[in-house]
Length: 538
Image 1 (tube, rainbow, N blue to C red):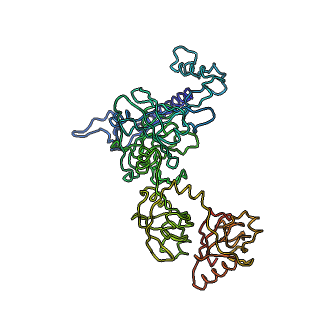
Image 2 (cartoon, rainbow, N blue to C red):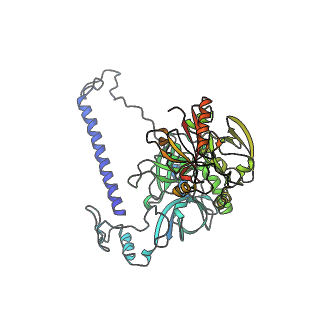
Image 3 (cartoon, one colour):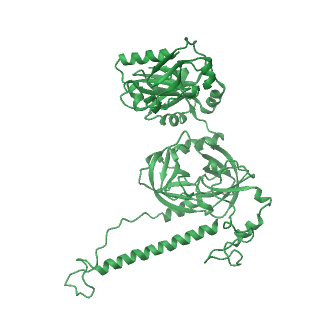
């Protein structure tokens, strides 16, 4: 609500003014008390004596005035229109509202501000617009939202966020010189929340270029430009607070965190370094209030460049695909696999007929290098594979039962792999032994039966030992093993029944191992395979 915003700005201004007076008062009080280095005002200085107080040396903050002047023409406001009840979560309202409780047509001005029916009120046009779009009007049945973007090609190519334009029926782009152009959607990528739109200008547009976001350092100055709350061309300055943030927004999270003010409406706008290069696309904020609290997140330029290039060229993304389900290598799992330290991505499952299976990669392998790039942690692998050209023959380094081996995999296309995963069911496995019940490592395990499969809703292709009871006080409970989970491997060997698990545990103890690695189908589901390491000595 615009009136509320103006009020809050005035309140902040007043508070700031009081803060200045308080600071000045503190200075005066200090001066009145006097110090050994501050002689009385009427004191006659001795020859050559300088009574000028010593001032602390302050480091000058960077000025971005010239930089902002140069970059502002390439940053745009984006307005979209969607049908009633559909479309994205609006990043900022497109139609100004009125104070809560005010009847339609009679919004009330606050004390010290112009009344809405005052002909000299600078916001009169906003109220007229509200009346025109009053309750029940046809125009009110449509939703409008705003965001930001920036021009990367003088022919009219503009980058923004996917959530800014998702579901849009009409897209308008407002330029710094007040030009307004209709835009069309070129392509969008929900996984990175990026989108590309295009306008048709009469003359070449001013553009900005991408920088190398990998060179950003924590503490480096950055500048955000955008359209917060519909206030186009707003500039804010801050620093890089952190890098490589995972906020669970998608599979390729690698956000830049900044304290530069980012608010609703900044979505899709650029984050610049002080050389004027785009190093990030402002995408999300953490805020309990809905406004900036100094925690904003930007998609790194190096993540965005490849996505944007594909969207411009193909209208869609074309990511690499390996065909594995992976999980992190914890300290317990590393010990179970005889690794020197926690590293790499542990393969929990392999997609049938996918690139990994064809290359000979197996469940239980730990991928430590892909196409010459080290896989330090599990989250590194999806990004590395996605950036690898489709059809490439790439070397993959694995750790298998403590030995390092290399295989060659042909990278597939992720979009094709997702369709294959939906359409493909795992192949059957050998038959099961007679039912048996054992208690081991704080669990009661039972060999698979039709009754257990029905009771827990276990997938028909899952074979192994069913967890039917878990001790409350024990490591199995701590690792979140539950009744209905199915152990399909123990000690990197296939399990066909409860007795197999007990045998693998005995073998591990005789080999003086400290832990054993279990492959578990959580809830008995084929798509929920997890490796869990349990200590042999509790």
